[in-house]
Image (cartoon, rainbow over all chains, first blue to last red; front, side, top):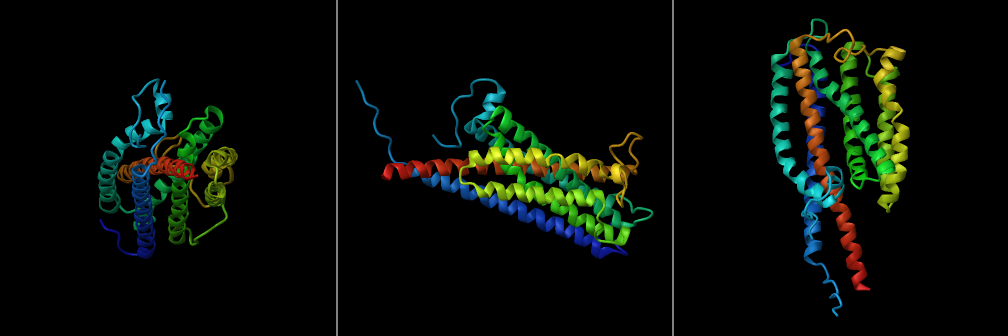
Length: 56
Length: 254
């Protein structure tokens, strides 16, 4: 059954805190992944050409 | 060559694991399946924790805090254990992915430890009559949080991440002495915490319905950690690639 009765504020406080912290953690890590993926793609698209290898 | 691609795999699994490009290839296949599996297990865990498990005969519904407190407390120690193994990988085997794993895990461990302390204090107030008591378990867990924060600060203090890795690895191994202290503090010094009721010599001492909810939530949080750790490791590999590309671009301008 869903929690009810005494000490509800502690039960919902604990669960609510965990849910909020977990969502924020996932969002932070997700945004970091998107940022780095885009940054690598942008930098690799603008790579300066390597000098040609000398040929015999 | 992009960081998301890699040369053909050669050598044994350990050397393949050491190549950042190879890591990006195989880890990329696991992220979404792990995320879906984590969501499914969390669904079952929430059902068991909030609906299927009974009230405790003494604590009533307050026992439901256990289903979020214990997984976070377990992960606070397990993540540190992973970091200690990664620190050995950095110092002993000089494994290129070991310090990436060590760096990725530190903020996750800090969050799980902070949540263990937070949920524990909210469980303690109605159960013990106090939010905080300087008993062995709580004090050593607080020390563990401070160690995590110290490790995060140490990573940020160095521009040279390879140099930082060796220093952080030594600090991590020194701090690992706190893990058995957290685990056995209740046995050694007593305090308000009850002794272990799952991993103990006399067998499990929790009602089956509560044990099902607890273990499901432990598995769900552990899967969440593995998923987030993989994503963070992938981001860290890309961060190093970004630093390398920027250095290359700067050299070409000169």
